[in-house]
Amino acid sequence: MLSTSHFEPLYQFLGFALTVTSHLSCVTQDVFIAGTDTGTLALEWGMAELVRNPGAMRKAQAEVRRAVGEAEFVEDRHVRELHYLKLVVREALRLHPPGPFLLPRASRADTRVAGFDVPVNTRVTINVWAIGRDPDAWEDPDAFLPERFEGSAVDFRGQHFQLLPFGAGRRGCPGVGLGTAVVELALANLLHCFDWEVPGGGRGEDLDMEEEFGIVIRRKHPLLLRATPWTPSSEVQN
Ligand code: HEM
Image (tube, rainbow, N blue to C red; front, side):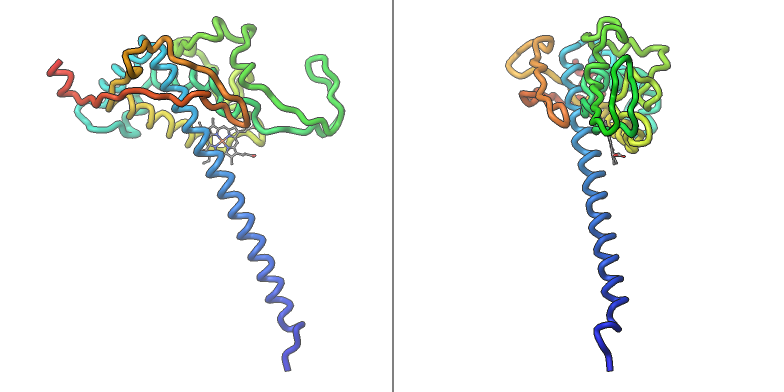
């Protein structure tokens, strides 16, 4: 005769399976949320900066179109050659890190940072938005100048503390490689396939760049641009 105790191992296993499934679901959601909004925002801010800086837009577009040649779309193999476009993405992430305050930390011991006492268990946020615009770290910090990274070793993988759009250390973004690759590929395709302008004949230089701060930094007003399809043959016709 079977008693409820016979089913105890089954109950335990089901409980364990349920916990694992719910953890997996949470982790998947975290990765999905962390990996989608951030990339979209980087792309949107990058496009806005390029429209506001027509010189940089022309240079990036010329590079992409030269590398892609007769191909219809930009592929990974082309992106490897897009030296200037990578500088554009780095500069866009300096000025507009999608996660301006990273994820909060807590101090594990009493400590002293830059002359400030930080008691144990203090919640610490790191303002990478402000660090990216710090005049002590950057020349002409508010200007969009991808060229500033020409020949510079400063990158965003967490080793250079003046540029931390992906955070740093053990809790730094694990998606830095994928995130960058997606933003570079998407931006390159937008630049290759279309010419961009402000609707209604407005000047790109006057584009509104107001920010809305939260866990992520969004544009206060959505970016609205007119896209004109471009192919190598449209160049010949012009
Ligand atoms: C341009 C794209 C991206 C940006 C700017 C970005 C930025 C960040 C930042 C600032 C953090 C917090 C790091 C810290 O506090 O030190 C973070 C965490 C994280 N990111 Fe990304 N991310 C991007 C793309 C991705 C992608 C594509 C994925 C996954 C496929 C991803 C997965 C995660 C996860 C799971 C965390 C939490 C890590 C932890 O708490 O240990 N991210 N990301």
